[in-house]
Image 1: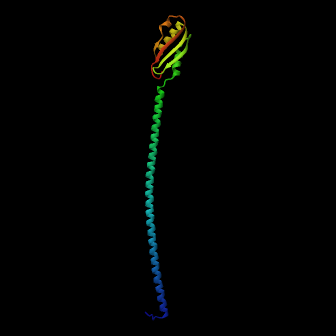
Image 2: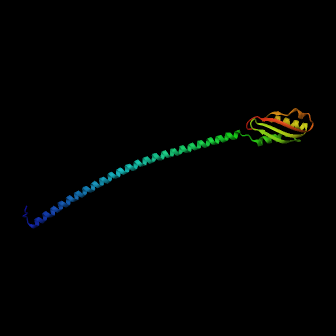
Amino acid sequence: MINLLPQSEKNILRIIEKEKIILILEIILLFFFICLILILFLIKIQVAGQVDAQKIILEQEKKEFESLGTKNISADIISINKKISDLKSFYEKQFSMTEVLEKISKTLPDGVYLNNFSYTNNDNQIILSGFSKTQEGLLKFKQNLEQEKNFQGIFFPLSYWVEKKDINFNVNFKLKNEKGI
């Protein structure tokens, strides 16, 4: 087609055509930016959702770890308490030989000395051997042992009561309870 319009009109038509092309390009560019913004906004929403999901998972794992840690600590505390209880019962069953010896030494009157001390753990039996200057001292020692509430079955052989002076003696008795005193 031949354009018979004057040159000034042709120029105006070219300008209008260029303006239309520019307007179309601007609309396409605007549509592209709007789509880009929407895509970026959707990506942001998706990433934020994933971050929230990871936070929830992290919180659950943290609670699980803390409860597991608490369970471990609780198990350790229970184990330690059991060990302490076992030790306490063990030491309660032990008897103090020092206390027994102290009680025996308090029962010794003047003039009575011990030469030998023997203890049998199986039946809590004590065997003492010693020396008494007089029969009265030995009798006083026997009475003191009998007054002691933790000693039972005190036995002095009758042959010791015949002699009046310088008596070598043996005495047997048992402790009443496991701990001794």
